[in-house]
Image (cartoon, rainbow, N blue to C red; front, side, top):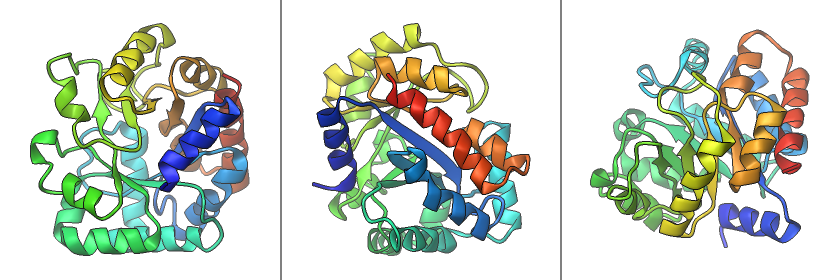
Length: 263
């Protein structure tokens, strides 16, 4: 069993929900980012989402856009992102890592080369937000063949007619976007999320983690209570962007993780 399903199985056996933490690779620079990433498991992160910096992040709000800009200005590349995964794997061989971003850098590198290096580095899954199911032959199916989970986004506008297509070829978990709009733009509502999570679970049988709009430990708990896990990105990235030391960022992550785990 690969790391992502194994993690959800372990959490289920323990009666706990998942906490998923997002950081942008290379933000604010390689060394400080790696220090945060290495500290995330001890701070309570069950799964790490590592952003692949890109110049035109259409789904991201200001916080994550700025994180990507900081990383790019500090010299971050897709190859260095893969190296960061290798550096993390030198100290942690169990925590799943999901690369999240856009298709252009992968396409530019070459799909086959990217998948080979990602698997070798220790990547477990991919979230590529601008590749719809109609483009599965581009990356999703090759990624699955390479042993990587391909995690799809579902949104409040994913209706019953569209959902089966979204869930087709999806593995690992489903990432439910709790709001319509960009990251960091509103607060998630557990009451609104709960029926959507049930609908998605019924359609695919995969764990459902909910992200976008979770900024506090209390909200992480409330959302995790009606889903299989909470995902936090912008609130963490904000702390990095304002210059918090890695130890302070990780202390905040622990608050969020404790909230999700209390669900």
